[in-house]
Image 1 (tube, rainbow, N blue to C red):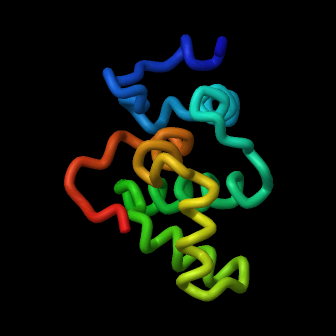
Image 2: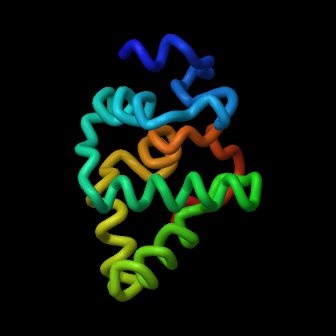
Length: 110
């Protein structure tokens, strides 16, 4: 948990500044959430980080599903099911947090 001491988090455990994110913080956050950082999870996190760096907003779940459809040769239903299997307590609660996003405030999570 050493990496997390170097960054500021809000009261819900989300990074205050996504620029403070690094892979060590992701590992600590994933461990706290009980998420295994396997290759598909790292792929999702990398996509989210890249999307944020280009758009300056947190990608919502439909963007991640579209990424999985395009990059992992899944149909939309299977991609969405896999996403929620990987992050069982929810995309916002777990994927966004591990990827270093600020907590999304008012958009659809499905």
